[in-house]
Image 1 (cartoon, rainbow, N blue to C red):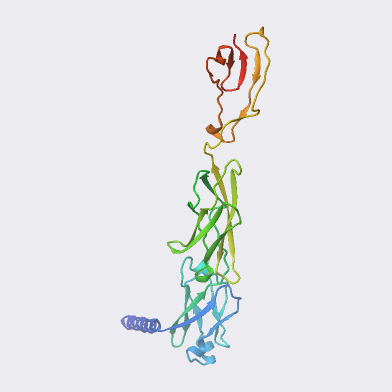
Image 2: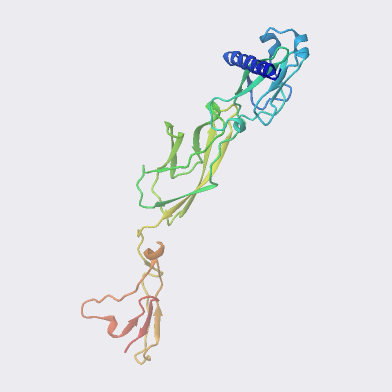
Length: 303
């Protein structure tokens, strides 16, 4: 008796296996946009499988899947498969062009299973975004017009026409943006210098760099670009006066201050550091009578 029951159990397993093999050979396919409302009809499985509505209830039609969420269910009175959970394509299929949810429609008495694939269509529900909030470029004021600088790329969780399609730059007098497509990263951009920079006029230039997707209406995301204009030694020191006149009595004490000169340089850093010195003209050497502090510009009586 025990052996017979074991054989029957094996036979049942074989029948189930054959059913599953038959199931894998065919498939129903539907399409639906992501983020549709709960209750939205995907398709009518009773019609597509040529089943009577009465069979759906008597044979206990159920929708099963391996997902943690129950995205779909079936109405046994109509045969309609409908959306039962919010569907976020980017959550289910991140960074994948084609996204589909695979489920099974299972019937009992006799047991059969039908494979169903629901293609999830993308909608423009994500905006382009940059990884960083701001981006800094250090560009020398001696840079030539036409020079190019790579800019960060934006990422968009959407795909196809809803992904990043172009970039634009806020209006300014120094830079333009050159947008390229078809590269490794899809659409990218470079900053192009259009006008010579002058650190003494504008040491920092702030730009707004915007990524725009191809959705209708389009969505966008922005990045602030700070251009630090690096100094070159392109300015000469300038005295506060073109001529200084000072009277000194012949009995002025040694070390007395005669005058303190003042010169400035519009450059920065080491390029702005000023050192004062006397110039000997002919047989006249000012350093015989006066001392000059090379750093402060202070002239004092020497002898």
